[in-house]
Length: 320
Image 1: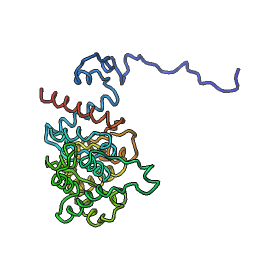
Image 2: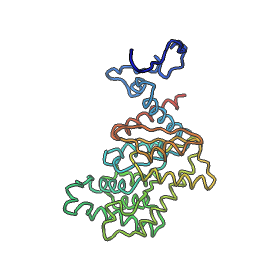
Image 3: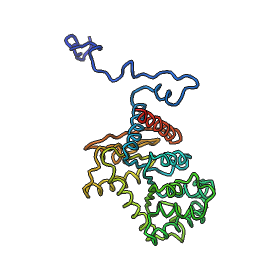
Image 4: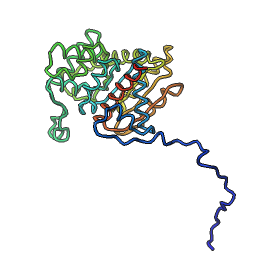
């Protein structure tokens, strides 16, 4: 006999599994897809559990927001642009599913380069060696000119950028979020942290103008946040720090001024779930009402997937 005591299990209390409340049932498991099925049929094949359930619920919340004329704010980081997802987001805005875009400065830089020259994303490691990283003068000229015009004309940086791209008739503007948002009159606010973007390395960077323009964009963004009450949606796609922090401050300002901003839906979509998006987007804003989702996956897959699910959910709403 061993030296250690054993707990006697003779009198443990048991029950029937058939009487227990369970999280997974025969009606929640996946159905194998078949060749040639529609996207709607594919969605119905997904198991009704965990993130498969969440992405359909999130799509449903966005569809309901459009149906009920509630705002949908899409915040995003630079990687979303580099993954080629802007056409999908632009299309959602054209169809009324996104009512406000907000990004950091890096996103605006990639957007401008794609719009003006059809290419972006330099080799940072290689160009850092000789100090040429971020020294594209034509990129800096557009962004820094837009900031100076914004300050002079009392515009937000995003609106000024869209207007400037339209005036210059950039050759690849159909996929520029800044330009297309401007044409659609959908607010696009650019939230810049001075010193974080390559255009700040250039002699034509005007800190006062950049600060004035991006602070105005913060106030424009806060005005959209203030309208989220009862059914609005906030998406954070691929911004680990800046946009979650901007959103939290805008939410505080809105509530301070008497806007409840309760009963909203928030979501963080990223390749890795970071601390700030989880607490500043998914958790804290909905403590007093609403629902927050965190969905992990690559942008180039998850954004088109979510968009397709939104269209299907809205079609289902319209049929009811």
